[in-house]
Amino acid sequence: QVQIVESGGGLVQAGASLRLSCAASGRTFRRYSMGWFRQAPGKEREFVAAISWSGGNRNYADSVKGRFTISRDDAKNTVYLQMNSLKPEDAAVYYCASGFPYGMGSSLTNEYQQWGQGTQVTVSS
Image 1: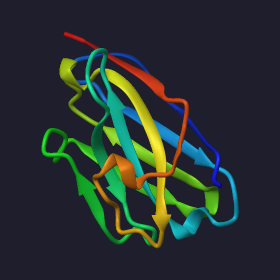
Image 2: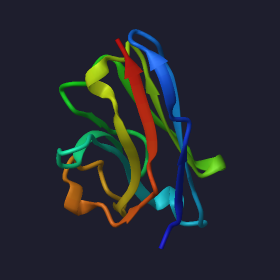
Image 3: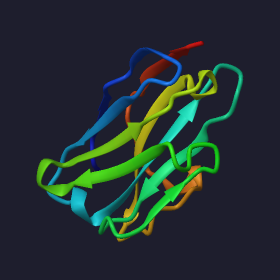
Image 4: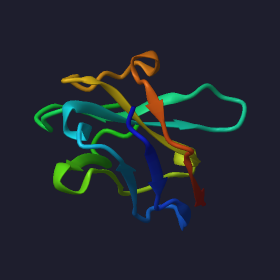
């Protein structure tokens, strides 16, 4: 099992940018698809972005497409979520999770196996 720690959250003004990092342990990190999800109070966890094990496929929720970019650096065992043009509705706890080995980057929550503790993103209007 891969161990995951998110970081980079904080309070920003609407329109600003933020980059989240997801550090994962284990030499098998590069075999796994990875995803970012978020959860606001009173709402279910929702898909944000995912990247295939190879990095060749990226998948985004419609709400963030064109504003967010997911990437991975296998040499550093790290996945990033670059968030630009942040909106108040982006405020949530953001979670990083590992999918299946050789996964293509699913948007389905139940296809992710290991989750980090989350990092809070707050966006002021």
